[in-house]
Length: 417
Image 1 (cartoon, rainbow, N blue to C red):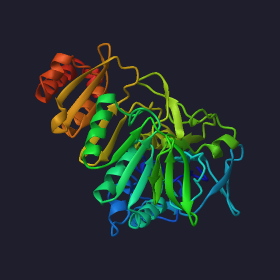
Image 2: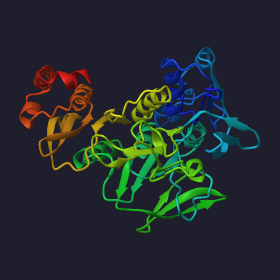
Image 3: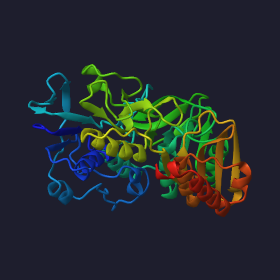
Image 4: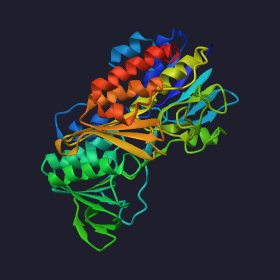
């Protein structure tokens, strides 16, 4: 390959793709392009330790020596303006071009824009990048009153972090419960109770009508019921949208993300897409999904590298997610849409339990709070295609391990896969 591989996007997906190309023996040119002027970094800590600790540093995904030692040409602060797919070339904003044999789009997603009067005021922020986290950290040190719009993972992680730092925090969620698209109602209710117990105020079924400010800085968030919430800082966490504009302008198929096949190839086979920006037909559910998680990003990156190097593996990774909210480590494995019953293992009052979701007799997924062993075992069970009975679950982890071992012994083909 004369021009090698160009990777656009230097987050978890892009960096893993570069690393995996070398691990797969690819010896051509690898160029990794990122639009931030930073060494690529871990994003999950930004909503937790980073924003509450003035001394916290970003955690690099790989040290500088990795890029030079692996002959990966990392180019920070570069924005790609256009993909010329027929010519296999990228136009760089400000001038210049990059030729490629294969292109991997790891463009990620961005916060959903808030269509709200007053959203242009200073102090109204979203969290997606290190620069955002630095702003939130700086402003939160001067802000007693914080309003968070959105009761998803990011909003609740920040709420718990800032409340622990002594701020007055109000979470405003438009639908009638927290984490509406992410977890079962029993988990959402538990999270709400734990947050309210530490002093986070939560308003569900409520929206913000407008924001008001003083001297150009936000000061009040006015709810749909007319309540005026003091707010020296407003953090918007109402979801994310995939960055598909480059792909769309290049004529690639797009539908809630850049459409890819099971080898991560877009509608132009020499262009692949991975991570938050990619949508695909999921092997487990049979439905079209776009997953925003570090696991999905890194697993798809590994597969994309194998595709580029001539392998024909299909994407079959078991999806899993996590979130740290106050004293709760939430871990989710599988995709639970379409479930019709569930089994609870553990004790909600002890803040340690797991919810096993079923569709008929098929185990769809597991949501765990402070039970990491259940989560790890669940990943093994779903990866093997094993659905324990509710009675086996009730026997506890040791019974589940024994049942899984027996299943694998009787299903050697599954075990090998």
